Length: 94
View 1 (tube, helix red, strand yellow):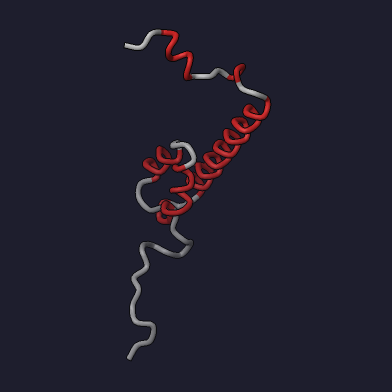
View 2: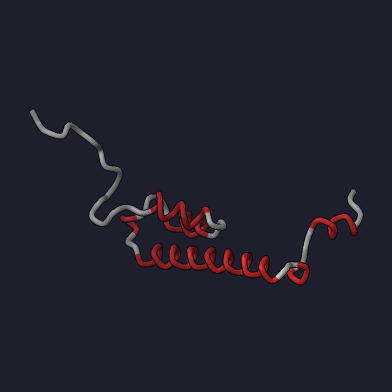
C-alpha cells in the first residue's frame, strides 16, 4: 500500500502549476467543454433519423473527454436526407 505522501509526490495541485501550465490546462478545458456543448446541442436539435444509433447512447459518449464529441461528429451523424449507410453500386447501369 502506498503511503499518503507518495501520492502527493506524483500529483500536482492547481497551485503547483506555473502560469503557463495553468493557461494550457484552462485552454484544453475550454476546448473540451466547447466541443461537448456543441455536440450535445447538435444531438438535441438533430432528428433521430439523422443519428446513427440511439441518441441516449451518443449523449453518454459525448461526455467522454475529447474523444466523445469527435466520435459523434465523425460517426454519429448522418447527412440530411440520408436514412442509413449508403450502398455503393456500379456507377453506370449496363
